[in-house]
Image (cartoon, rainbow, N blue to C red; front, side, top):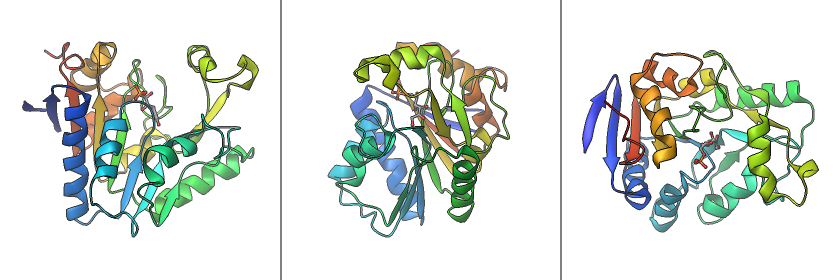
Length: 241
Ligand code: F6R
């Protein structure tokens, strides 16, 4: 099912596998239209799209990718780093000419966030893929983040630290900070695809699409962007009016 809410093209699909196919088509159209820079995300949501990209005959060897975020303190070889995730789910099978992820090992936050903003300015993003947090976050832009924010260092909330603890040998190893593109950086992308699955995301989806534009729901700023695609499964769409 397709519908239009605000400026956003909303597509409701059966499940995550169907969402992978629908998302793949949006990537394919962007590439056909000449996209050169793809903005990418980690987490469980994009995996079915990456599976479709990997299985396809699309060639990324002349393209650039720019990822949203990375944990401070984790390097590319750490299995919980977002760089490692991207290698595993996409880049090993489909290498890009350049793949940028914030450098979690750069302890100089001012230098790293400036480097990343310069990099985004030099490589304007044609299509940005986003997942949606249960609290309406995009990237690591938690509720309260300014709509003009650029790349910044974020202190993770205790609930995120607790949720991540299961992936580490002990709690001390769980990152306390991340580098994330800001809302302003994300809104500069020419086209945006945000994807959400499952009941747990339903309230955030309704707030993003039908609630007021507010820093309380960072994803609601997408209502101000002229070219947003939304892919949802039925559970994630269940609180839309
Ligand atoms: C990932 C990211 C996060 C996730 C969001 C949803 O790079 O920036 O904002 O997109 O937390 O996570 P999943 O997809 O695991 O539900």
